[in-house]
Amino acid sequence: MARKKKSKRRNDQYQLPQHVAAAQQYAARVAAYTPRPELPQRRLITAALGMFLLCLGMALFFWIPARSLVHDLRANGVTVAATVTGSDSKPKYVKLRYIQGENSGKEFNLSEYAGMLPDLRADDVLLVTYDPEDPSRVLSRSWVTSPPPNLPAYGTSALALFTFGLFIAVVVRRRWILRTSWPDHPLLGSSGPQNPGSTTARLTKP
Image (cartoon, rainbow, N blue to C red; front, side):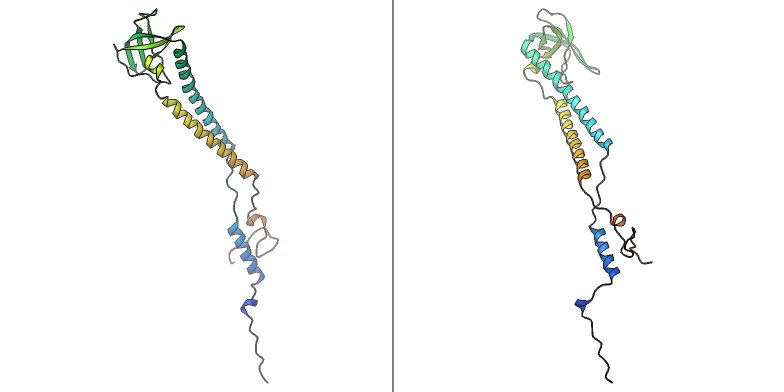
């Protein structure tokens, strides 16, 4: 009796067992899973907004009074000669005595421009411009005609822009995360490969 020849199964007809195919599909889903980014907390947004408002307030503090003083002295100021009677850096001040005009002999402190004072020494003589309605508002004539770079205002303005950009970026990122539909994690939102219908996956052999 002739022995029956066993038919060889072709490789292209071979199919993986169902549980193996399910495990491969599950592993692919896990590998492709993109978790939701961490949501920026409200306290971070509040902190960024507070930093912006603080820097903005400091920038306005350095910009507005200095520009207002220069504008007023250019429009209505009186220019006279004055002599320096004293100066110090701690605390920072420059004391002047007018030697011309109706306020001759009176002493006033030189006004600061954005927290800055010119480098002067006692007995220096210079031209100053003061407000006739308030002689204590006085700047050196050179600073009235050509104010120095307002470095404190520049620095705080740059910080204000940076913190405002940070605030906007955090708000936009939070809204994007909340409005984007993120997929559930396969471990939590789908069945395991070994036991369809279960909520846990068995990834290792027992």
